[in-house]
Image 1: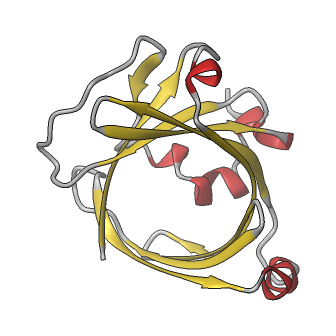
Image 2: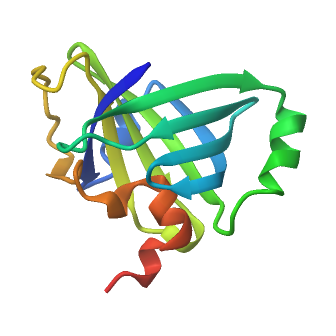
Length: 156
Protein backbone atom coordinates (compact mmCIF):
# COMPACT_ATOMS: atom_id res chain seq x y z
CA UNK A 1 0.00 0.00 0.00
CA UNK A 2 3.03 2.25 -0.49
CA UNK A 3 3.12 4.10 -3.80
CA UNK A 4 6.55 4.97 -5.19
CA UNK A 5 6.45 7.29 -8.18
CA UNK A 6 8.44 9.96 -9.94
CA UNK A 7 6.97 12.89 -11.89
CA UNK A 8 8.34 14.71 -14.92
CA UNK A 9 7.26 17.50 -17.21
CA UNK A 10 6.76 16.44 -20.83
CA UNK A 11 8.45 18.39 -23.63
CA UNK A 12 6.43 17.31 -26.69
CA UNK A 13 3.30 15.38 -27.67
CA UNK A 14 5.35 12.64 -29.38
CA UNK A 15 4.18 10.24 -26.64
CA UNK A 16 0.68 10.24 -28.17
CA UNK A 17 1.93 8.16 -31.12
CA UNK A 18 3.45 5.66 -28.68
CA UNK A 19 0.42 5.35 -26.36
CA UNK A 20 -1.30 1.96 -26.07
CA UNK A 21 -4.16 3.41 -24.01
CA UNK A 22 -5.89 6.70 -23.32
CA UNK A 23 -8.75 7.61 -20.99
CA UNK A 24 -10.48 10.83 -20.01
CA UNK A 25 -10.28 11.42 -16.25
CA UNK A 26 -12.41 13.66 -14.08
CA UNK A 27 -11.40 13.87 -10.44
CA UNK A 28 -12.09 15.90 -7.35
CA UNK A 29 -10.99 16.03 -3.74
CA UNK A 30 -13.13 15.53 -0.65
CA UNK A 31 -9.97 16.46 1.29
CA UNK A 32 -6.88 18.04 -0.27
CA UNK A 33 -4.79 18.61 2.84
CA UNK A 34 -1.23 17.27 2.36
CA UNK A 35 -1.46 14.88 5.35
CA UNK A 36 -4.37 13.03 3.75
CA UNK A 37 -5.97 13.49 0.38
CA UNK A 38 -9.27 11.81 -0.40
CA UNK A 39 -9.87 11.69 -4.14
CA UNK A 40 -12.87 10.68 -6.24
CA UNK A 41 -11.95 9.73 -9.81
CA UNK A 42 -13.92 8.69 -12.88
CA UNK A 43 -11.59 7.15 -15.46
CA UNK A 44 -13.35 6.07 -18.61
CA UNK A 45 -16.15 3.72 -17.48
CA UNK A 46 -14.72 3.06 -14.02
CA UNK A 47 -14.63 5.02 -10.77
CA UNK A 48 -12.45 4.97 -7.66
CA UNK A 49 -12.07 6.45 -4.21
CA UNK A 50 -8.44 6.92 -3.18
CA UNK A 51 -6.85 7.98 0.09
CA UNK A 52 -3.21 9.10 0.07
CA UNK A 53 -0.99 10.01 3.00
CA UNK A 54 1.87 12.50 3.22
CA UNK A 55 4.88 11.96 1.01
CA UNK A 56 8.26 11.14 2.47
CA UNK A 57 11.21 13.56 2.33
CA UNK A 58 12.17 12.65 -1.25
CA UNK A 59 8.60 13.18 -2.45
CA UNK A 60 8.61 9.71 -4.05
CA UNK A 61 6.80 7.47 -1.55
CA UNK A 62 3.52 7.64 0.32
CA UNK A 63 0.68 5.50 1.59
CA UNK A 64 -2.09 4.91 -0.96
CA UNK A 65 -5.38 3.04 -0.58
CA UNK A 66 -7.79 2.74 -3.51
CA UNK A 67 -11.13 0.99 -4.07
CA UNK A 68 -13.35 0.73 -7.12
CA UNK A 69 -16.81 2.26 -6.67
CA UNK A 70 -19.87 2.52 -8.95
CA UNK A 71 -19.66 5.40 -11.45
CA UNK A 72 -23.08 6.67 -10.34
CA UNK A 73 -21.82 7.02 -6.75
CA UNK A 74 -18.63 8.75 -7.94
CA UNK A 75 -20.69 11.28 -9.91
CA UNK A 76 -22.64 12.13 -6.75
CA UNK A 77 -19.48 12.31 -4.63
CA UNK A 78 -17.87 14.68 -7.16
CA UNK A 79 -20.67 17.14 -6.35
CA UNK A 80 -19.44 17.16 -2.72
CA UNK A 81 -15.80 17.77 -3.63
CA UNK A 82 -13.85 20.90 -2.91
CA UNK A 83 -13.73 23.54 -5.65
CA UNK A 84 -11.44 22.72 -8.58
CA UNK A 85 -12.30 19.53 -10.47
CA UNK A 86 -9.35 18.16 -12.48
CA UNK A 87 -10.08 17.30 -16.13
CA UNK A 88 -7.41 15.48 -18.14
CA UNK A 89 -6.65 12.70 -20.58
CA UNK A 90 -4.24 10.01 -19.41
CA UNK A 91 -2.08 8.32 -22.01
CA UNK A 92 -0.19 5.13 -21.14
CA UNK A 93 3.13 4.45 -22.85
CA UNK A 94 5.33 1.39 -22.35
CA UNK A 95 9.05 2.25 -22.18
CA UNK A 96 11.34 -0.67 -21.39
CA UNK A 97 9.98 -2.56 -18.37
CA UNK A 98 7.82 0.34 -17.16
CA UNK A 99 4.64 2.16 -18.13
CA UNK A 100 4.54 5.94 -18.10
CA UNK A 101 1.23 7.66 -17.42
CA UNK A 102 1.16 11.00 -19.21
CA UNK A 103 -1.56 13.49 -18.31
CA UNK A 104 -2.71 16.21 -20.68
CA UNK A 105 -4.67 18.72 -18.61
CA UNK A 106 -7.66 20.82 -19.68
CA UNK A 107 -9.58 23.75 -18.27
CA UNK A 108 -7.67 25.86 -15.78
CA UNK A 109 -4.64 23.53 -16.06
CA UNK A 110 -4.55 23.68 -19.89
CA UNK A 111 -1.01 23.53 -21.25
CA UNK A 112 0.37 21.24 -18.55
CA UNK A 113 1.77 17.89 -19.71
CA UNK A 114 3.08 15.67 -16.93
CA UNK A 115 4.37 12.09 -16.82
CA UNK A 116 4.46 9.71 -13.86
CA UNK A 117 6.23 6.40 -13.50
CA UNK A 118 5.59 3.95 -10.67
CA UNK A 119 8.60 2.07 -9.33
CA UNK A 120 9.26 -0.85 -7.00
CA UNK A 121 11.91 1.10 -5.07
CA UNK A 122 13.15 4.69 -4.94
CA UNK A 123 16.50 3.60 -6.41
CA UNK A 124 15.10 1.49 -9.28
CA UNK A 125 16.57 2.29 -12.71
CA UNK A 126 14.27 3.11 -15.63
CA UNK A 127 14.52 4.30 -19.23
CA UNK A 128 13.84 7.95 -19.97
CA UNK A 129 12.22 8.60 -23.36
CA UNK A 130 13.28 11.68 -25.36
CA UNK A 131 9.98 13.50 -24.62
CA UNK A 132 10.62 13.37 -20.87
CA UNK A 133 11.65 16.74 -19.42
CA UNK A 134 12.52 18.17 -16.02
CA UNK A 135 11.82 16.04 -12.94
CA UNK A 136 9.23 17.62 -10.60
CA UNK A 137 8.76 14.74 -8.14
CA UNK A 138 9.47 16.78 -5.00
CA UNK A 139 7.64 19.92 -6.22
CA UNK A 140 4.25 19.84 -4.49
CA UNK A 141 2.83 22.33 -7.03
CA UNK A 142 2.55 19.42 -9.48
CA UNK A 143 0.34 17.30 -7.22
CA UNK A 144 -3.16 17.09 -8.65
CA UNK A 145 -4.57 18.09 -5.26
CA UNK A 146 -2.55 21.33 -5.44
CA UNK A 147 -3.52 21.92 -9.09
CA UNK A 148 -7.19 21.64 -8.14
CA UNK A 149 -6.94 24.74 -5.93
CA UNK A 150 -3.97 26.52 -7.55
CA UNK A 151 -4.43 26.01 -11.31
CA UNK A 152 -1.49 26.02 -13.69
CA UNK A 153 -2.93 29.02 -15.61
CA UNK A 154 -2.46 31.21 -12.50
CA UNK A 155 1.23 30.42 -12.04
CA UNK A 156 3.67 33.25 -12.77
